[in-house]
Image 1 (cartoon, rainbow, N blue to C red):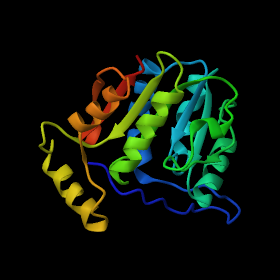
Image 2: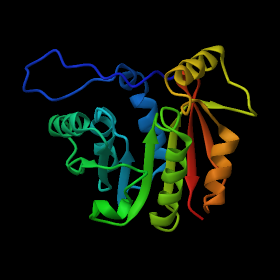
Image 3: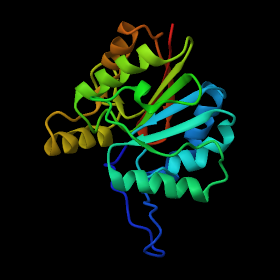
Image 4: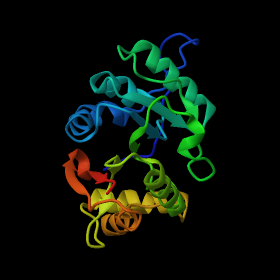
Length: 217
């Protein structure tokens, strides 16, 4: 079961801007395997809603020479992303950029190489459906030919939750914001194919999550 994004302050010096998300340590290695198997290693990847920046710090070095462009909408997250990048072995992580996927486009980021991949980890269930629509539409119009869109998180299948814990999580999400909620795999797939992506490769992940890999046709 996914959890709310609830980053914690570090336990070290006040000058350390790194935030910590407990779920990252549990999923970063399996996500690394998915990234290595399904994402390109050339061009630029834009990570939408990078959060603390821990995923970039853990995965990006393995993806070189792919440029990794982290982004977020909150200033403290941008600081954390850059702080994590400075402590990592990766030299392919670009400075974090503010990105509001509803208002901005990937062209606004002025990327150093063609956009070959877009990823969003634990985003579309903790956001209105309009965020998923904007994310998919803008990825479709900007990704290079055969580019990849990766979405990770909990999903319903055939309209049903895949576990009691995901059902409880969905109820908790909706209690915070009626526009949030665990999305239907079929609805997300239909949205993506309607914008020119292939049907997804669906990868079972720990804690009743899925990775969805869409290829631009």
